[in-house]
Image: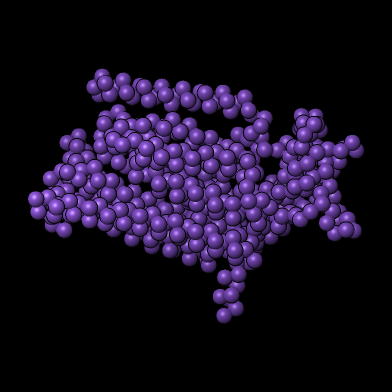
Length: 245
Length: 56
Length: 147
């Protein structure tokens, strides 16, 4: 088992394996997102109170879920990289940052586009919105820190420490709507009793969420491969690959 | 025809709904294109370096 | 696990725990500021600030919405079922504003105990359903066989 993992973590094996995963994950992600968008925009009925504006949830909610999920992956990979000094974990961590930042940005902007017609405001400084904005700054901070240090391995360690410290923000975002009075409504799908959303509205949401997750798998591997090549540019297998074209 | 117009009208929330979806599509696409461009740039750089090394 | 790795792991865990405790303390200290709004009963108990504007959140009492003749000023009462406060607001209301809906108003109390709002936001709930389902739910509730 350990030997298998070690082989997996070797740059060359990872490069070949990820090259085979990316098309599958990417195509399934594209299909799921298209189906989810069609179902959410066309098939799902309008909400009894919010009318058609509620269709924004099919972008907003998966993006918000992914913004938290990607952060946990980034911090976890960063911790593994710090403790075991595994290069590949460092690469996965830093490759996750721009994707997570994108999801966070999408969650904030689509939330704003939903808030204007429904709440009556683009933005309020309530606990949920503020903590999600802090998450965006954490992602940007990790990226900036990584970019500011010349040596990539030192940069990875510094970025990982920032990412790990920022993990405390994750439960704050998740529970903010329960701990404090917020303008943002409480949880719908993850409520312990049954979710308070009609099934024909829930299905496209879950499909979209799965599509976003596979999209993350595909794009993080794409970024990781480039980052890996960049770091290994002087190694033999990369040279040979360039030679082959 | 009317159905299609209603669809794009989104019950009066067209601006908000379509901006959300359009922006999401743009951001998701950008995250695919960016690594592809970076990869191409890196390969070009490495190939150039190799040619220069071969000449000397 | 080798001793150096164990040391690094402990260091990381200690770091997260330390930052976590510091954040928890800070958040508890600023708890009141993190509350986006007060409930009508908190206002009735005098917990809301008197010297600066604050927000009140509650449900718009059924049958309480009165529009003034100028067409822009609305008066209604906000309730959390335990306490009720009268609100006056001049301006454009959000699409979701209706009786029985949760809203948040920002403003201050005048001498007469009326909350004069300069901003009204609608707070939508976490329920999503098609109109037909909502209708049948309502009929069922009126029939008295729910709850």
